[in-house]
Length: 252
Image 1 (cartoon, rainbow, N blue to C red):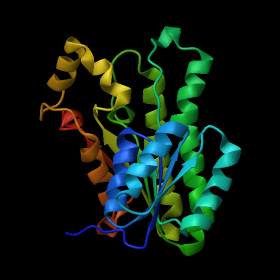
Image 2: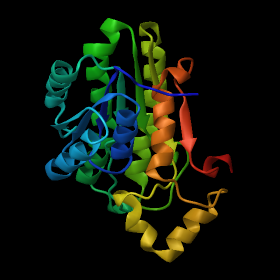
Image 3: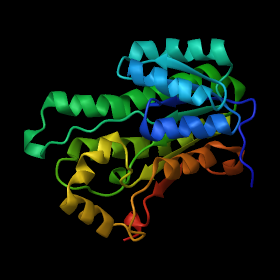
């Protein structure tokens, strides 16, 4: 099976690093014209140059919590690259606090990026480019903690990713008549900047690995491959699916 995205336009949020960057690189190497979206200006510039060395790519600075700017950014991308065929929503954050220590500001920070911003990115791309053309694929990056409970200090994160899971399922139903497919990836722990500091704790890393039957951490490439499969025509009959990339964690 040869998965290609020739002549297709893909938007990736959270594309300046980690999972988002890996997805942008794989999409570009598979023929897509890629719009890298992120709020970190310096990292975005560097990431865009890296992806441009692979294929066609442009960077667009956007904070997904700035909802009024999402639709204009999508419009700008359409003017530059063409109508959008693929959207990968990878922007995400965690504020690690116990339930009783979590403030309203902490809660709003996590939910506004992981769930609210993701929803309005989905909405803007669907309204502008996918519904009118009755075609498109969206992949949201959720987490195993949208499916099962996590350790302490992940309450807001779990709530946000649970929201992504149900949002993905409902959008799949709502937009199926427009031939738009929406799926989500639910990774276990992936070695990224978001998790690296946690995994330097030997006790915590041992706990994580003991919960993964394959007994290894996921890589960003593991997630990118699964994401690009769901975004491709090879998955044309798959929608509303939450695909764990977790080494068997949620099988327990």
